[in-house]
Every structure is written in C-alpha cells, then in structure tokens.
Length: 352
Length: 184
Image 1: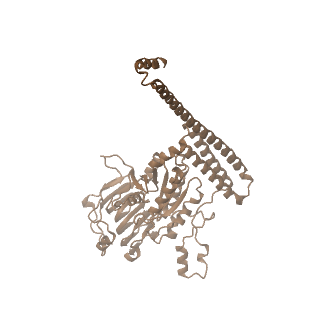
Image 2: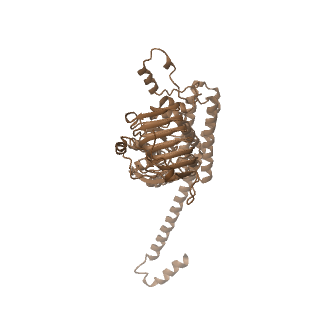
Image 3: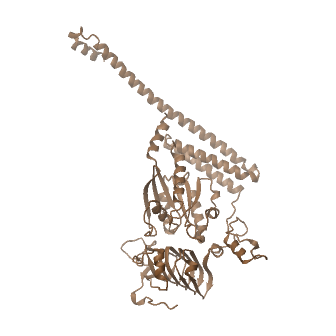
C-alpha cells in the first residue's frame, strides 16, 4: 500500500504546488472503500445472525410445543368423555398451527432441521390420532331407514317422503346392510332384485334422470328415452336396451349379458362373456373384463331421433370399436380381453 | 426487512400453486378441469394416465394435475403427491353404490405424509342429476367431520353446468394463499 502511494507521490511530484490534495484525496477514497467493505461484511454477518436467531427461536418453539402437546395428550385419559372431542380438536389445531409455523420457516431452515421438524409433526399427529381412536372409537357410518315406516297412520305420500328424505343418521346398530341397499332405498329411478321379467320405462319416467339397474337375472330391460346417466351392477343373463345418454354409463360385475346402449362415456368393469352394441362418442373403456365383444348400436324405437336431438349426442361420431383396456397398456398388440363381433354374427333385428 | 420477509416476497411474486385432483373413476375430474378451463366437455374419454393444465386464476398460476381414477391407476396416485398445495377430491354424487369405496380411498390419502398440510376440497359433483346426494349427505357418507389433519371444505357442484366450480376454486386459492403467501 505504501509503495503504491509512493509511486503516486513521485509521478505527481512536479505538480505538487497545483494539486496539493491528490495524495490525501486518494487516501480518503481508499478509507471510504475499506469502510464500505467493512460495512458490507457487517451486514452480511448481521443477516447470518438473524437467520441463526430465527433458527434458534424456531427450534425452541418447536421443542416447547412438542413437550406441552405430549403432556396434554398424556392427560387425555383423565378427562371426561364429553370433553374429549373438544380436547382432541384443540390438540389437532395446535399441531396444525405448528405445521404452519414449520412451512413458514421452511425457507430458512437447513434441510436437516426441516426434516426433523416434519417428523416431529407427523409423530405428534399420529400420536393424537392413536389416542383419539383409543379413547373415542369411531362410529360406523351407515344409512338407516326410519323405523316407524311400517307403522300405522302413514299415507302413501308420507311414506314416499320418508323414502325420499335420505335418512343419514349415524347409527351403530344398522351396520349389517350392504352397499347395494343404498340403491334399493334411495335411487329415484331403478330396477333392483328382479328375475325373469321384462322391465320397461318410458321417456317421461327416465328423461334427464339417473338410473340404477342392480341384481337382475334373466331380465330384459327396455329404456325408451334419454336418461342422464346409468349405473349398472351385478347383472346375469340380461339384455338391456337404452336410448341416447348424454352422460356416462357405468357397468360393473355383469355376466353373459347383452347391452344395446348409446352414450358419451362407457366404463365396463369386471364383466365377462358379454356383448355390447354401442354408440360411444368418446371411447369405451374396460377394466378387469374378459370375453367382451363389441358391435355398433342398432336399436330403433319410435322417438329415437328426437332423443338424439334433445340430448345433443352426436350421431356422426361413434367410436364403438375404439376400446381402451386398462389392463392392457401395450401399444401395437390388441388386447386379448375384447374383440369386435364379426358382421355375420351380429344381431340385426331385436325381437322384443 | 428480515431475510424471511424478502424470501416470502419472492415466493409471493411467483404465486404458483400445485393442485392434485383425484377421485374414483367416473367422478368427473377431467370434466371439471376442462369446464374450468373453458374447453369442450363433450369429447372427454375416461382418462388413461393423467392431464396437466396450467391456468391463471385471480393472479395465481394454478398447475392442476388430473390423474385417472380407474382401479388399476390408483396405485400410481402416490407418484403425484410431492409438493402438492391442495388436493381436490371429486365425488360422483349419484354413485351411491361406491360411496364406501370413495370414503376408503379418500381416508387412505389423508394419512399420506407427503400430502400433510395440503388443503382439501371435496367436490360433490353431478348435482345436475336428480338422484344425486346433497353435499351434507356426502359429508356424512365420507365422514369428513373426522378430518382434523387438513383444512377442508365440501362444495356441491356440477361440471356439466359449471355451477359452483369457481366457488370451490376460489376457496382453494384463498386457503393456500393464507397458508403459503403473505396476503397484502
């Protein structure tokens, strides 16, 4: 530094009289520069300190909260049952707050601390849930019918209302009903548990409604109209006809059935040995199916054209032979689970 | 201005959130996504794989992942969990037969560590069908009241008519914003 200053002194030696302050100015500038560097370094240190401080306080808060939560949790068993729900709710809320604190601090936490903090929270959550399950066993959710439905003094309209008003009371006792019973009780438009019958519904009964067909065997179902959606479950040796559906048709667990359907979406699950004469504007899909065969839709009834117009289902677009098999994702090789019915083998006119 | 504030401000500028949309097959996930994005919904096929859409909504950049709900695809759901800000669970409100399935799958997701802290919106979809269950009925059926680990809301909606889709999305965005971004 001294050499450098000396050089300047020498080179400007001749003009010292005119510019007496050069060396001093340079000296001053150098000091300023050093001061700036020093200030910057201090600022940097300050920031590091701040991060260090936040980290310290974060870890302290985390530790404190963890201990106090664990303590409250341990006290749970001594509380009255009626107060338990509120107690657990408040505990969960505190963990949630802690979680929020962690995600807010995630920006300055070193990866290890973040991981530790998250572990602590997960552990606390599972501990709370565990204790909660122990002390407050979960009630089972079931649908239950109003018990006085069969009692006297009920006119048919009232009974209908009761049926319509879904009774969703949580009850422990009525857990014996299977899922299918939900449909039996509640779906507005349905055929359930029928054998060897011809079942029919007309446009005014089904248009723009959703329909359920469940547990039928050896039945023929004729739906002369355009429902919005259809759920089909557990059919055996049935033949189903339906007009255009602007929404989706969902088929599960059917065996040896024939379906003649027009719709926007068709999903077929766990169905075997069945034939589908379909009009699908998107693409049909099959999953866990075997020996299902496809042909184009060919049912005709009086108001078919009107129903097509009313539903807006495109008559031109029919992807009946583009079937996606969710169990056969190989491209280039045809799925062994489905096939097209060769023209000569197709039914051309339905005897109803 | 502390470092934290600066970093928050930076994050705030991006305002990018990741939303994962799941539910049983036939629930209407893709239809909701397309309707929300103003696309044609008449040609939607069942999702084989997934769809991603990035849309701008109220100044936020929403990355919405819509993953197929077929049984054979559900085991792949977990591949999409990472850094999810919100989970949208879509329910076919007219599918009474599979409500217990629906409940089981939802509750299995909620214990996932990587979804901890994510906002949960349940769309009770297909309210346009006369036989559909209402939002309170779906809430009971899915036992939503037992959820203490996530902020949640159930919203009845119809993807076909577009009814209430915006309400639901607004809630999701607000909830994420209050959690991650400092609101001005």
